[in-house]
Length: 145
Image (cartoon, rainbow, N blue to C red):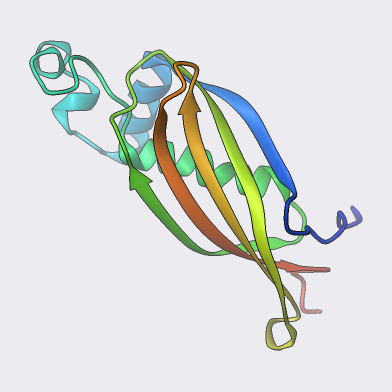
């Protein structure tokens, strides 16, 4: 059994690089069923306010919130996510996904701690494309037996 990493503490942060390639956008919309033309119809998307293909909001949400599970894979359970899209994410955008722990509260009833995080997707152009908050249950074990 893999040992649980230490309890997160306020101020802890983690980040990684991610590129929203046309291929990743196409794969995501095929799997999710998101048929919005902004994600696959180049002519339509070029004439839109975005000027080209953009990633699905569901994709950017999944990529950013999934990164929490990547960071805490053994003993965390997502409880709540809230996202704000500040601009469309263009195909080809190279970005940094980042999260910062803002609070940790013991929650005896759930057998662990509620960890509150604030995150964002920031492009190499310096612009913030999405912000998010999340709350996870962090426990020594998700197993009950």
